[in-house]
Structure formats: structure tokens, C-alpha cells
Amino acid sequence: MSSHARRLPAVTLALAGALLLSACETPDAEAARETGDTVFQSEHHAYRLATVVDGLQHPWALAFLPGGDMLVTERGERAPDGRPGQLRIVRDGRLLPDPVPGLPTIRVGGQGGLLDVILHPDFETNQFVYLSYSKPNDDDSMGTTAVARGRLENDALHDVEDILIAEAWVEGRGHHGSRLAFDADGYLFVTVGDRQVRPVGDLEAHPAQDPADHIGTTLRIHDDGGVPADNPFVGEEGVLPEIWSWGHRNAQGMAIHPETNEVWQNEHGPQGGDELNLIKPGVNYGWPVVGFGVNYGPGTPIHEAVRMQGMEDPVHHWTPSIATSGLMIYTGDAFPRWQGDFFSGGLAGQQLSRVRVVDGRAVTVETLVPEQGRIRDVRQGPDGLIYLVMEDRVGEPTPILRMEPADQD
Image (cartoon, rainbow, N blue to C red; front, top):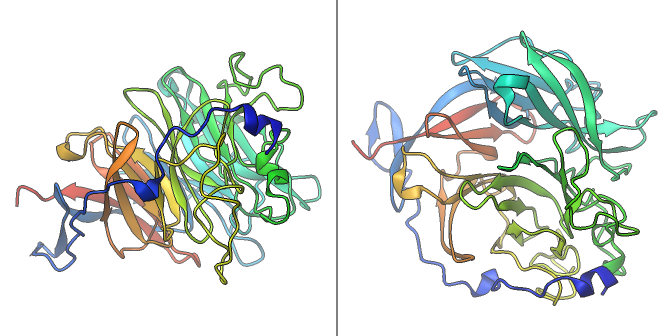
């Protein structure tokens, strides 16, 4: 075990496999229909799905603008047949035909492209929009995760600049991480994936276990890209100061708890072992040394163990994987019995997973929205409804769906 791992706190959360999870009723796709819409019955609420807008290609993330518009990122497809990553506007239920101009140069292909989008907490004053994307080097032979900031005015981005270029350069185009979230104190958190560096040989020598780079980390920065003085590794030789946590595989969902200001993430495992994690400063989350997954295909072991002192356990793990993407903590009034619950999208699982966490333990896990397609992002709207960004693996046009209560019917 590395010296960094030895000095970090011991595991404090029980293994997800040992959790006592209450059984939940699976949504009933055969339930009664009203006005042509299927009504799904969950443990606490009945709901139906409505199409908000359609015709998106590889949508990745959604942000709500104060005036009622929505910003949606489209990841893009690699040339010559595909189109570049684009930022789109949905206005009055219609996808505007022209993408937002002013984006930086984006390295599209594989899992790379234009990825997350969020607004600055003071957007109504400064109009700042933040975008994560895969950035090419000069000859496009390598790429990394980057975060750009620009002002949104008159449906265009202005004064766009990179505020973060991660030290995560590889030739491959996978596992960028790329989720963004502002906490209540105005700090910006950024996930960076393990860039698909293979977990073979000496697992503790894997880049995700080396805080001298940004591979497999969560970063914490100021809104202009500066490094907060109280980050856990500031001033420590051989560790990049932006790092907040490390030992991650590919976190594609992140949410800030509205009451505690805690940072939560969902993270892709390999074949098994997707995780829900409470992110703590300076803590090692173990990839690839510990985990619950196995190698794709043959199912051969990857990890040294499922737990190890100095490496944090997940609050919950999904085995088999659902391919987690997008994470939201519900606070609205439309579904009052879901308040405080976590909602995670699923790509391969084609589902929305609802997780209730009590005292650091997942006590309920329920599958919602079954077999409706790949859910890339999940967000709570200003109206208290739940919005799902749907994605097709091969790039066929897909919608944004909205979960609406049907309890009164």
C-alpha cells in the first residue's frame, strides 16, 4: 500500500453487500393507462412519463436557465460521419435549430466530446456557464478533461476560457469523468476519470492511486480555477493541490446535499461494482485496488480485495452494474415521500435507481422507469418534477422525459 493510503482514515462505512435493504415494489409497466400514458406504481408514488423535447443526439447533461429555457449538451460523434459536440437551447418546449456558438475546440470520439453543463450560483448577475469537455493537444494525438467558463448572452457564449485543464492526458477517448457541481460555499467540484488505464500488474501503481496526476480524482477549485488554500493536499510535495479525493474509476454523477453540503457521487464499476459514495477530503476510494467488479467478458478478478484499511467503502454498490450516470438528491414537493432520496440514472441498466440513505447506510433501493432507455442525466426541475436525459448508444435521436405525479388519479 502506498504511503498516501496508509495515512488516510480507516474504512468507516459498512460494505454495501452487508446492508439490510428493504425490498421495493418494481414499477408496473402494465398498470392502468390514462390519456394514452402508462402509469408506473412505485413504493411511494404513482407517476407517468411525458416527453419534454425530442430530437437530441447523444445528449449528456441538462441545466435550467432562470427564464425557463434549458441548456442541453450533445456529446458529438467523431468525424467524418458525426457532428461536433454542441450546446443546445430548449425554449418553450422546442429545441432551437441552431446550436450555441462560442464553444472551445473539442476532441470528439469514444466517450469524449462536450459533456457536463452547469450555471454559476450567481448566474443571474454574471451569466457564467461552465462546461466540461474533452480537450485535444496540439496535434489531437492525446486528450484530457477540461472545464471552460463563458458568459451566455443573446444565445451565444462570450469570453470563453479554460479554467481547468486536468493533468490526465492519454491517447484514449474514454473515462473522462467530467461531472461538475457547486457547493453552498461556491467551490466547484470536478470529477476526472481513470482514462481507461488498464488495472493490471501492480494495482497500487495505477495512476488513480497516484495523486501526482489528476487521473481518477475529484478536484475542488474556485469558480475561476484557483486552488482553495484549505484543500487537503495543498503544500504537500508530489501531490497536485486541486485534488479533493482520489482512487476513483469514472464518476459520472455528482450532487451536493442541500442540507449538509456533502459531496456525493455515483461511479462506474467495471463488470459489477457501480458505487454510491460520500466524498470526503483527502480520502482514497480504492480503485483499482479494492472493489466489487470483475474484468469484462471472462469475469476474472481485478481487485486485491473488496475492502482494505485506508480505502473508503461505498455507501451502496450495484452488482450487477447499471452503468450509473447522473445523480440528484430530490427536494421538491411533487413527490413528497421521495424528499431526501438519491436518484441515479442507469445506462446499461436502462433504469432510474432510487436510494434512501439513513445514517450512512442505504436502507432502500428501488428501480424506477424500467426499460425506457439509457438514462444519461437526471435533474430536478424548478417545478419540482424529475427530468431524465435519454441517450441512444448509436446516436439515434432521443428525448428528455419528465416524471409527473399520477397519485391523484
